[in-house]
Image 1 (tube, rainbow, N blue to C red):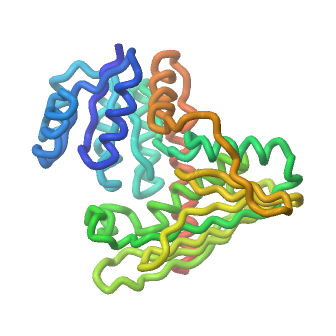
Image 2 (spheres, rainbow, N blue to C red):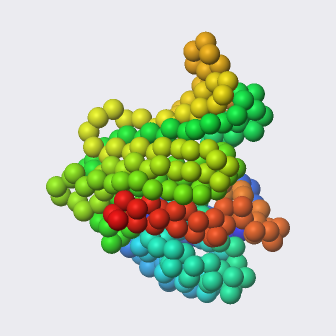
Length: 317
């Protein structure tokens, strides 16, 4: 049995707990949050022991792994603390707020001989998996270019305010959603990014994080991509179109997949049920169980952060 502790009791932590309930050889035994009431809510719902101090939790509990769901600026310190305790770590994306911090996290994991996996979740959505299969099969010919558009109210009252503090978040909409888009494109195309550049904008008068971003990307395989992210009022959407020589794939992550072979878009029926967080957790746990390197390694997470840093450098330069 692998005992897991969670550090951070925000919204996403509930998905991790629920995922573990379907795995009979692992269990979440405890959760820590600086706001004790948030952690205690998991005691009421799931019977998990609550702490207000994660350091006390990892000192007192018999754990083999932790899942860290803290604000981005706390990822490095919590990961290093856990690695130094000999605990395997699954860290939410983005891995950290700088490539230097990522490198320190990787070093801590390697020094202590533990697994470090970054929760880049895009590869676990059934529609993303199917899009990757279609592109690899060449049934729509050669992939030429990609258009990725994500719009929503990034400054909504529902968003935790630390996301809108650049010291805590490391950036605005591109640090958060850009990490998803980069991961999605790299994984689906099986090609790393050769170059990324673009522009960001600051049109919110209250918060000093970018609320819009456009990036132009060249992949190592020669395919180009445009990422457009709009965080102000308007129609919400999350659509990626893969344009091929014989058709177009329209991917709406979390909703479905459509293919147009010249006669209009038709929905692709997906047989696999959505078990996004469960499959992600299984990859992490299997790496621990079998002593293998997680596919979404610290080095992969570092690569995403380096690309975000390159984009920010181009947009501000």
